[in-house]
Length: 248
Image (cartoon, rainbow, N blue to C red; front, side, top):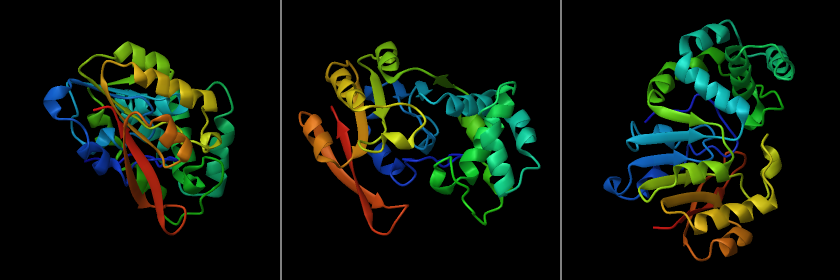
């Protein structure tokens, strides 16, 4: 089990083991596809999920970071070296991400800074954390090694599902939760929730889907197996209720 190098809104650190425990038997699938890969907590939960593994996300900056981790890890670490936890460096990184002319590695480093130093991984506010920044780079080489044989994609969810769907495919989907869509940099609308469900109605493969426990989602997926699950709420006291939905 490997930790993700970045925090991210909706990250599955606390649910990753519960999700993996609900995967079908290993011999039933030979390809594993993360449609909304995010910080890759579920992918990194195991050393290998299947013969073919695919990480995808619609956020180009996030995908660029993962590709640079895979192919240019040492260069990325050099670009990050010398950075420390400060408000000035956080807002410098935000401004520079709006500019053109940086290399992929330079952009990946600034996105990494943005996510590591922001409040609650929201990417907009400085987190005022006392944790030393350099400690957060210790997982980069480990993640790079884990991604050696992983295919990294940057596709829309509908196109990705159509490309990789087979009877022996297992899709894990963690879309923006209903009502939280504005917390992400990639557009996801009410219509996308409907469209995603319609796609999953007709796939050949198996899927497991994580969502917030909302009446709209329960009704939308009423024809599938729905299991309530909860975890600690990172942003406040108490428990946060979620749903795991699957077609097997």
